[in-house]
Length: 127
Image 1: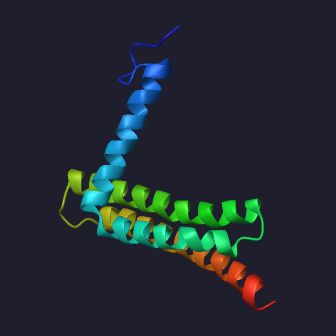
Image 2 (image 1 turned 180 degrees about the horizontal axis):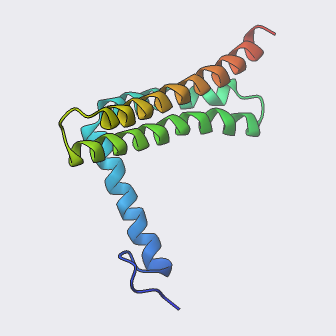
């Protein structure tokens, strides 16, 4: 039984609408967020290298997954910033804290990439 009270419907119809919303989100991030574009460019440049660097399919999946993690966290950070600015562009300690925490999350996700890829590079070329 479909729950028609939900704005995006239910079942297969909901999947298509959710996919379209995801497309719109990615499009907006690419258009409006320079950090997202930069991180996407780096991920696109690093993706071909991952095929050479990986020693197994699972290793490759990990290398690619951490790249995707950065993009996911950047999308969430951008959403926090957009919502915060929608509420008010005036400086407020809680708004600043929310934005700073989002930025810290992006930094930590980039650190995960550095550790994962650094370990892979070390294993491939040094050990």
